[in-house]
Each structure stands twice: as C-alpha cells, then as structure tokens.
Image (cartoon, rainbow, N blue to C red):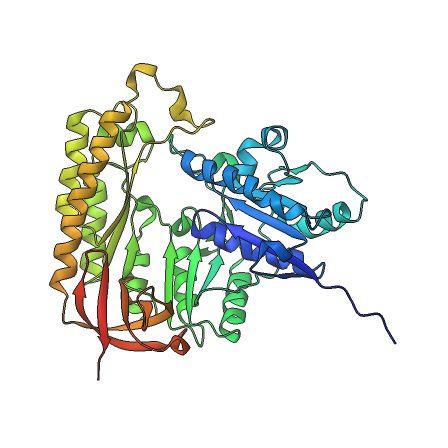
Length: 443
C-alpha cells in the first residue's frame, strides 16, 4: 500500500492594494507546486506568509505588530516558516531580518516563483533561516505560475507589474521596479481560465494599467478583447493614470457592455504647483479636460480619485485649489490621505522647511473628508429609487442581508440568501448612509 502523503498547509495574509491580492494568489500558486494547500487558520499552517504594503507608515506598523502576534504559533509547530513578502519586504530588506524577531524569509515582488522551493528547503533543514530574495527582475511576469483564487467573486488579473512613472511621493517604482507588461495571449488565457472556474467579473491590474503596451497591443485593445471573452459579464480595471486616458480607451468603455462605467482617476492635488513637485506630468486644467472627455464619452460614469493633502510645500492657496477641483468634479468616491514620508522617495529630499506640520495637514485632511462626504451624500441621494444589477459578494454585517456592488461600484446591502454569492440580482436602492446603500430585490 503506497504511503499517504502528508498535507502541507500555507496561510497567507494580505495587506494593501489589489495588486497585493493578485500577488498573494500567485504565491498560493507557487506554494501549491510544492504540495501546499492554502488554509484560513495560521495555527494549522506549516508556512505563514505576510504579504505587505509600503505605501504608508501606518501599514508597515500594523505588519510589524502582526509578525509579533504570529510568533505564538511556533510553540506547537517549531518547524514553522514565517515569510514576509511584498513592498515592505523589498523596502526594508536586511533591516527586517535584523530588527524583527521570528522572520525567516524576506522576499520582494519579483521573487515569488522561488518561494515554494525555499520554504521546503528551510523546513527540512537544507537551508538556514534568515534568507532574503530581493533582486528585481525586469523579465519576471510570472507566466506559468497559476493564480489560486479562494475568496471573492472577482478574478484579479495582473496585466502589468512595476511602474515607469517617478512621482516624488511614491515608493512603488523603487520596490517593484520598472514597468513590465504581460503578453496579451497570456492575459486572455488567464481570463478564460477564470471564467472556467466560475468567475464572471474580471478586474485588470497594473500600477498604471492603461499605459499597457505589448507589441502592437495597447490597453484599449486588451480591454476590448477581455470584454469579449465568452462568459465575462463585467470588466473593471485599476489603477489608471490620467495621462494615459486615450480616446480609444474611452470608446471601448462606451461600446463594450461588459466594461463597467466606472473609472478611478487619481488626481492627488488640484494645485499646479504641487502637481509639478509631485511630478504628476499634468496640470489641473488638463485633468479636468480628461474628466470632461470621459463623461462625454461614457454618460453616467462613476468617477473616483486619490488625494494627498499636506505634501511638502503645500500652501493654503494650494489646498484651496484642491477643494475647488473636488467641488467642480464631484467624485462618486475618493481615497483621501495626509502625506506620509517614505524613505527612498525623492520627496524626502525636499527642503526641511517645506514640510507641513501634522496639525496643519490633519486639519486639511478633516476638511477635505468633510467636503467629499457631503458631495457623496448628494450624489448617492440623487439615485435613490433607481434599479441596478448587483453582483452578490458575501453576507453583510446586518443580519439577513447580503452585500454586493452595482455596475458603477456602489456598495449595496439588501435582504437575501448567502447562497446567492457570485450571482446577479436586480436591486432597487432605497436608502443611503453616504458611502453605502440599502436596497430591496426588484420584482
């Protein structure tokens, strides 16, 4: 009788953006090659992977605290391997090993293909603990490594890794390297595989996803091709750069029914002076012109954005320009932040006297949040009573309800069966708390 194989278990915890969700699915695929199944409880795991974000200091502080908490699992599993991966791992490198007890592997975004082999060698004594995999590889697009999706109803499909922009506040180009675009045939193959696994919503991922180029393929062509894959009902993409919003991309959004009428356009600031310091490569007027083109081409499109307040050198006049732009555009949603200094970014070299005090930047953040919430309440209140198709994602926190999103990304809770997960329901919006809605299934 052949021996029964011992099941190996991996627990993966993800922090940060959608790109990190996609990367965690790649790591699950890498570990699966060595026989590891992904589990939901770190107490039963042979390897724990903490996939990290380095965009803001708060995210890194949370991770460091979590690493300490996870050490408790070594008491019952002395051969446990704890790996810290992602952007924070790439940024801190050896410092993470030297200053954080209990970390066995530090692996950056271009090293996940080797993760399964490294974990096995370490667990069985062939390799000492304290290994680093931090080399950036301009050719690594993880072709051939299957993404193992276990949660959610959206298939996150990475089409681009790294970034060629050098915004002075951003660490991403330094921890993920330059832009690398996947072959379109590989992207379409992954989309078809996701459909075969039961996914009907696909979200294309890239640091500046709409700058995608591969041979004679641009992003508009790729977006159209994905939208036409049999079985794909919804397509979203994030995060585009305003400078790469082409007329062709807008046309695809308008013409392909599967492409959701939703667009995230990070503006960061409404001040030309601040935008120039950020090296965003557009003016406020150019950004507004882009918004006008999108709204003209895709009527009813929902727009969201990112804003940073308190960037070094930002004056009250600069801040007022940001408020003015928000009043003019009236975004459906906005992610609003106070500037967070990141070592290794060009902004750290700006004159010390230019840095805005925490008191001032905190007050500006509160003001911009208040403005946006008021605008969002007005926008969401204006569509009460309308009917939308909602993709059910999971049970809601409110008893007896399920949670899902409309085609424009509005979050709706409504009475329903948890068994409706990954199905579509026609829902009438009945009330709103500002960012979210309540609804009822429309007869």
